[in-house]
Image (cartoon, rainbow, N blue to C red; front, top):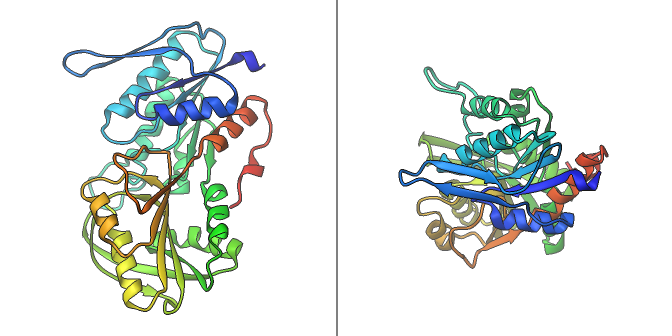
Length: 310
């Protein structure tokens, strides 16, 4: 029943959570967040949630305090006898650690999945995971949403001639191919070599670039190094324009400066991660309506597949 739904927000995605609640037709529930002098986090639900369906909205962006806050919110809801606890995680952090690609490293995504379940989450709702197989790390249901339902209409609205969709690395080829098929566009795949994380040493591209309007696709943008390097390389090879579409705008380090000074025409992102500052080249599209619609469908046991373009 509608009266059984309670929406609560963590600290980092408060604005997005308010927009989701408004789109859903409810107000956010009352919850207090308190920090002790040493930084320890304490949360308290200021209304009864006994027997209720509780949706806890929080992206797990760095620092790790945001993840810890989400876990504490889930644990508090469990101890307050919530009927079910759905962790709505617009951006799922630690997803880049999705496999053991070298000796003696952790699989951080699996660790986070285990912690969410142990804390008491009965379901997870997230968007554009770094790798689809992360869903298999959970023993609870996962609703994996795609920002393509927001990005594709925007790209179509640009009405770009000679459109080409580009993947910034080999791992993004599947996503780029899906977009290209939907848009009836050509595809380009970039090949990059890294000296270490966040540092691209060399980049080249496979496919036709000259005379094309390029749209680069990625699930997240961190320092912006890969996208900026790709844009510069493609413009040097005769591209008419280069845009980038990324679901999660982490934008750390000198990312804003890198993007502003790059040859990118614009960077289109969602609001799963709040921007730290404004940049004239960055366009933000909201995912609030999509999450609100899926929350409604989940609560009423309705299919959510109609929300997926790819």
